[in-house]
Every structure is written in structure tokens, then in C-alpha cells.
Amino acid sequence: MKTLPGFSGKKGKFIVGLLSLLLACNGETQQNQINLSDPETASNEEIVHISASQFRFSEMELGQLTDHSFSSSIKVNGHIDVPTEGRATVSSYYGGYVKQNKLLTGQPVKKGQVLFVLENPEYIQMQQDFLEIKSQLTYLRSDFERQQALSRDNIASQKNFLKSESDYLSHLAMFEGLKKRLSLLDIDPESVTAENIKSDIPVYAPISGYITEVNAENGGFLSPSEIALSIINTDHIHLDLNIFEKDINSLKEGQKILFRLPDKKNVNYEAEVFLIGQSIHAENRMVNVHAHLKDESQNQGFVPGMYVEADIFVSEGSTAKALPVDAVVESSGQHFVLLKRGEEDGEMVFVKKDIKTGASSANRIEVLNPEDFLPSDEFLVKGAYSLIQ
Image (cartoon, rainbow, N blue to C red; front, side, top):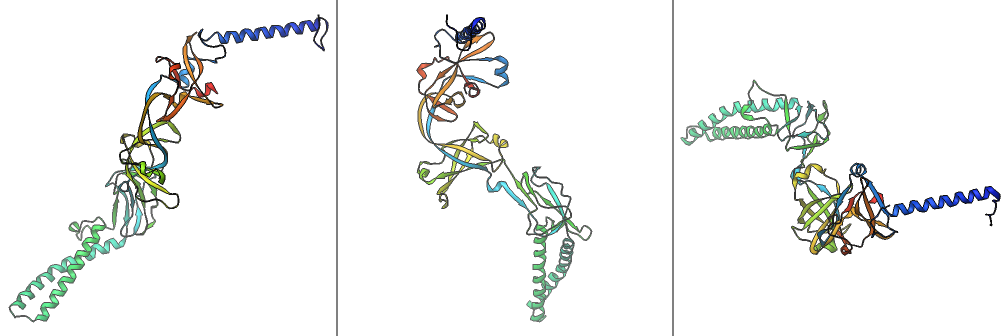
């Protein structure tokens, strides 16, 4: 009997025997793994066992082949935005020192809510001037009417009449101007009296929404040209999408849109084309498309400025068998799924199967060989990627 080079005697025979034993055990292990599949499963199919706790902990899901309509679509990018009426900046027509500003970025506000208070001695002077002009106007109107009657009866000179008319009309103009200025300060002119002259005025929220920017600081002077706060209302958000000019003729209002966020590509939201831009941006040859969400109750999950990826469905397609995109794993140019074969020792048993794929849309992928599967077959539609790789 020949011995392996480098081994001789009893020691060599022992090592050869040990190697034979290890090879035999390895063969038995492989045979046991293959026997976990059903009888019709070929010996080269890969078997995967998943315990009930692993299935729950990894939030895995099962699913079946379903019919899905694969429509022709255009892939576009864009962002979430709000209409013009959903944005507001807060400033004052007249400057003042900021008081009682306790607002923070992100804080919700209601329309008509007091945001902060402005204080300025000019407000006092404006109300004082208004009261003085108001008191003079009563006398000037009476004098004007008297001079008008005397002039009509040729009792008073025309000069006196014209002077009274001029005084009255000039004071009337000043009175009306001061009324408007007080209204811009949110001060009711009818309520201004010598006893309730104000040195400060409240600044109110023009819309309901959330504070996006705070520039006004307590004690600081806010000039009329400065923006104190910015507010945004997300009750009616929309999509601003960018379309290449070559696809313009395929678009029309009312077309279905499915969009998703980059960090949640498996979750689709539905919208529809509302307005199509009528001009092409010279720098990128794109047209802006304005879209509205179908379900505005989802608005709270979005923040204006968020980037989105979208599919605009421009034509209806054929119906075919499909699986969720997450159920199919690509490896070395081939596509695989995990098909449930049954249960064994409290664990679910899956077999790795080849699958032929076609078109994809709305997070579904077409299966070109549905005849290889039964209608009742179940697949691992969530969590397959980590098990097949």
C-alpha cells in the first residue's frame, strides 16, 4: 500500500484515515442540506431557512404573483413646493423696535395671531396729528359751508370763500391720509382718542403655517425694508417637476404621476399633472410641470424643498403578472426570487429560483415566465436581498 509523500508508518495511516472521515462528514452534510427541499427540487438549488422570530424581526413579507398594468411612463425629477399663497413674509410699513418676540423656527402659527410687537415714538406722533387734524376739520368744514352760503348770496367776498375752501380741503386730505397710515399700523382710526394713544403696535400673522425664518430680535430696530419672519403653509403642497423638451408632446393635464422620496424608494405617492409650462429654460432645455397630490392628507409627511423622483404615465400599457421590485434580486446578470416550499421544524423553507423579468413601474416588476409558478405560490417579497446575496 502506497503512502502520501511526507507521511509514513502508523502516523501516515492515521492522517489519511482522518481526511477520509472529514470528507465523508462533509458529503453527508451537503446531502442533508439538499434533502431539505421538496423531492422535485433539483440538487443544485439553494435552500434558505427562516425562523419565525427572524421573519418578524426583519419585517419580512410574503406575496404572490398579481396582475399589473405596465404603462408607458417618463422618469423625471423635481421637488416639493407650495403655491404662492402658501408663502408669506412679515414686515412692517413703519419701522419700530421689536418686543415680545418668542417665536422659533418650525413653530406653528395661526392666521391673525400676534407674532411680536413694535414700539416707536412716531406712532404717538401720528395719532396726535390725526386727532389735531380731526378737531380742526370740524371748524374748517363749518367755516367753509358758511363762506359758501355768504358767497352765494353775495354777502362775503369770493376771496374769503376760496381761502376757507382751500383750508378745509387741505386739512381733509391730511385727515384722510392719516387715517390710511393708522390703518396700515392696524390701528382703527375711529377708536383713537386722546386717552388711548398707543406707543406700540402688534404685528399679526398673515397666514397660518410654520415659521421658516426668524430675523427679528427683541430690542432690535426693524426697518420697513427688512423681513422679520417668513411663514410657509403646507396644507396645499404640489410638485415642481422638470421635463426634457423632447417629452413635451407626450404630456397633458390629468395624467397620473407616481413619485417617491430618495430615502423611501419603495413607497409611492400619487399625483396628477395640473399645469404644463409654456416656456423652455434656455440653460437646461427643460419645461416645468406643476402637479397636485391626489391625497392631501399625506401633506404632513413632506417638507417644501424635498427632492423627488417621479414617473409620469403618458399611455396605458398591457397587463401582466408581476411581483414587488424588492422580491427580485439581481446577481451576475441574472434575477432570482425566494419561493416558499413549506415549513420544517418551525421554520419556513425557501428555494432560490431563476426568474425572467420585463418592464417595471409603480414599484412592480413584470415576470416573463409566470408559467413556471403556481397561482398559489408565495414569494419572499420583502427581505430577499440580504438572503440571496
